[in-house]
Image (cartoon, rainbow, N blue to C red; front, top):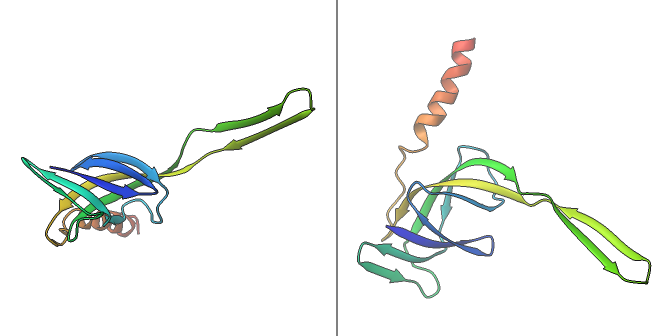
Length: 128
C-alpha cells in the first residue's frame, strides 16, 4: 500500500516505514504529523485518485529530526561590468518516518508515539 501526498509545494510517494526529507514542519522529534492532502492511494490492485484530494484519507508520520540541507552558493556575474554577487542558502528540512496510511476516515492508532514518550519520562525519574 502506498500513497501520494502533497506538502511544502511538492508531491511525495510514500509507504509505511518510509523515511522522507520534506520542507520544514513545526514540531520536535517524536511529534506526530498528519498529512491530509492525499492525492492518491494504491491498495493492492485498487487505485483511488482524488480530485484534487481524497476525502477521508490521511497519512500519519512521526518527526525524526529537524535538519538542514546542503549549503548552496548562488553566484551572479555580468561580464565586463564589474558586477559580482555571492550569496549562500541552506534549506531547513524535516526528516519524517511514515507510520500509517489511513483511508475511509479511520483514526490513527495511539501505539506508535506512546512508548517513546513513556521512555523519555522514565529516565529523569531514575536519575532523581
